[in-house]
Length: 228
Image (cartoon, rainbow, N blue to C red; front, side):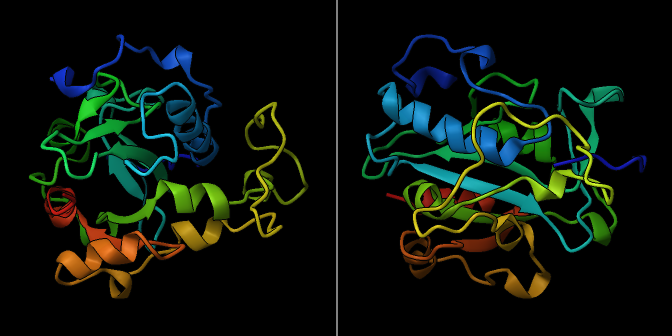
């Protein structure tokens, strides 16, 4: 994950107040940060042991230019920044009347934040933006993501092989099937990939497909309301 130079009540969580430093975080490696966050939430009893209440969301678009607000890396007013892609985790327990929570280690919003708050304050769908900045959301069920995701960090090296940003200290993530790098499969999205009508069948796909489903920003809240 890198930036562009272009302008531009968590009362339902029965756990102690959490701080971002509790979790592993390497700047500009949001996909690995969220991978480790999912594992820690499961290990610490803050999520289902198998991560079945967690969903990993890759935010991207065709031009790899997505605006988000309240991002710590921003030097601009209201924390606006233009990422090439971003990765967050949404927690929503099935068969429970509980609110969805967003875990974003790069956000200055409360950690975690209710999904409605995060959408309103960080995604800001009410703001009119140019079509090339329109954001798409690939939703992947965490248990599937933890088995299949892989990254050897090649995307964070320049043409001379130098690191664009210092990599995490832990070993690179290798998928269960031995794949060493498939990040592009997750962050590559186009309007043609977007599900036109979010319904029960869409939810079923998320629970079965490696790359989940791609939805538009207007359907994000509705999507998680269908998980019950």
